[in-house]
Amino acid sequence: MTGVAQVEANLQAVRRRIEIACERAGRDPATVRLIAVSKRHPPEAILAAHAAGQDVFGENYAQELVEKAEALTGVSVRFQFIGRLQRNKAKDVVRVGAEIAKVDSLRLAREIDKRSRAAGVVTPIHLQVNVARETQKGGCGPEEARPLLLEIRANMPALEVRGLMTIPPLGDARMHFRALRELGEALGLRGLSMGMSADLEEAIAEGSTEVRVGTAIFGPRPA
Ligand SMILES: *Cc1c(COP(=O)(O)O)cnc(C)c1O
Image 1 (cartoon, rainbow, N blue to C red):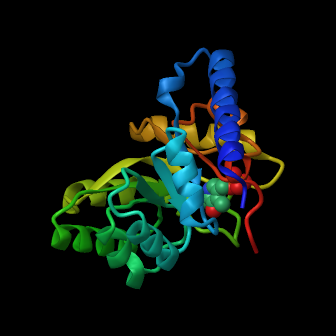
Image 2 (cartoon, rainbow, N blue to C red):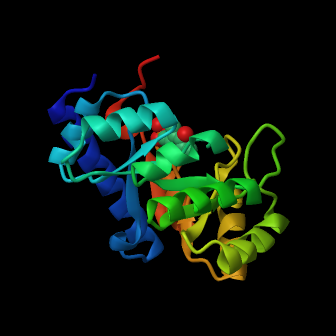
């Protein structure tokens, strides 16, 4: 595992990258939220980042998320589930108070809404859009985002749609970030979760409000 001092130095470097990207784009760095992606790293890595002022963490696996949330009870961190959520795991993810970044179907949205109402919480979500229409990737088609949003707003009071998210094709990120921003503008959604370790600058240039950064903070993930 990357040591405490290294995690702190890495976090500072990532914050600096965000500041510089914001300066270039004429944006206020306070408008870009940093999600530290801690998947496959131990709870100690989260504690190291927390000691350096980081409070939101991204996780991809429901079981791992629940274990870490329990291990860190009493520590003021929150989680965003950024993996592909199976409907039978929605209950667990909602129970630990996590935000959910990849909602791409009515069935999944209904399940999260139902579980959130049962738990008496409102769950912040992002709608995942497959901007490049890559067959192997999750996300709804761009034309499906509006009907999904309208149905959620009309009938799912325990969901708070924070915005859109996407994972662009390798090596061709910027035009897809732009397409997500334009879709967000058309839908009146300002929140844009886009950008990771390798492409956060391009994402911020296109209006990202949440970057999800793992490797640049915690180092390579254990196998
Ligand atoms: C793992 C992951 C990240 C972080 O990727 P890095 O390249 O390590 O910064 C961001 N978003 C999602 C959805 C991920 O699964």
